[in-house]
Length: 270
Length: 279
Image (cartoon, rainbow over all chains, first blue to last red; front, side):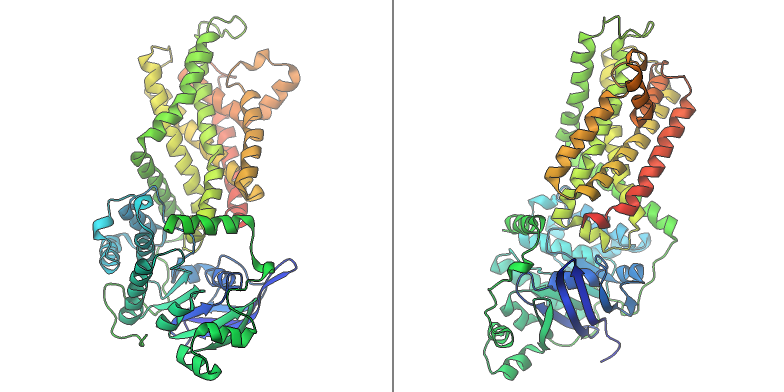
């Protein structure tokens, strides 16, 4: 592997007594689409928060494009795009105004801003939506707009936290179509978290399965199926954890605000 | 999915690590401007918001002010009480906007906007200063509406270009300071429901223990001491001096100094505490 776009080495994140991530290690090659798989509360979002510098690791090391998330946060943020699970565009602004806003705050030079916005609009097929307030857009349109805003600074690594949660099958398919094109045509490294195994199997180059804060398996989707002699990634999960995917850990259910935010997102996108 | 092929110029990811152009101050200024402009755009899309926010100060002015217009206790020389009250309700309405900005930032946290902003190279100071400027922009629009209504109603302010500009500058500074204070509260309480209670708990004493509604001289000694520790008192005194020609000691620069100092302290504290603490 060339110098990895993302390197996670024995990462530990603790919140008081609770260990949300307990010694996770993996590497993502430049241009790869890498999926973090696991049930809700497995530690996927915590890992992505460390990689996007929102959360400091308790122990271990994490590098993004060669920069240490702990000591070179600004350099990391200058080289990434991040789309959280919750809706991150401003509903009170139009689609165009959201693009303009993120172009400014991500440090896109003024002379290049219009051109980059036009490129992102074309890539995400947003032209008919530009004058609409974001709060009037459908879930699929919102996700496309969010991805467009995250492309303006031409990120080397794009982090997406459950990008298709709450979307209908058509909107899911459209979002993945755009992400696939981004990886194939532009060589953007994509790190995506999901608990939807069918999507992971179809769209990711490689996967890491996380459960209760620990990385329990990783490899290419076909390789994982072959290794465990099963037909689906759900079965891979069951084989490595000894329990079905939909059984959540009560320890990891999250705070009231997290649950409320997740429900709010599902309501907004649905 | 296949390995990456030829890069499209449309969305090509530069695999070489990128460095940011401009120094920290330039990035703070650019980020603050971007956030302030976003607030202006939101106001432009929501005319009803400007109207509804303007109702409360007008009610204070035309109902409370009219009811007490002939009160001897509240008389301030030849100045009509409604004119005396105008800077007070202007400051109070702006403070309401500022204090409840904290609620908005908790809401933005719940929506994911805050996390997204924190993952950009935008300096933390720019996030806080941008929010404070946004509150100042809203207060400015509200104050202009109020001044227009006051002018049409013939309430006798001392109209001068310098006075109005100075008053609006003071209002923006103080609103920014109170917005920073509300972000500090938001960082401490983290939840919307708790913020509502604490916001009220702080806002009402600040309002009533100031010179917004009545002169300091009618207050008992202990309350006058409290009012002198209250930054809202200095804001109102400054506004009153510039718009009406009466005020505390008639030393506007001192009022400006206190408000600027309050803003600087709140900005520094909020930048330190918020927004990481709210996550």
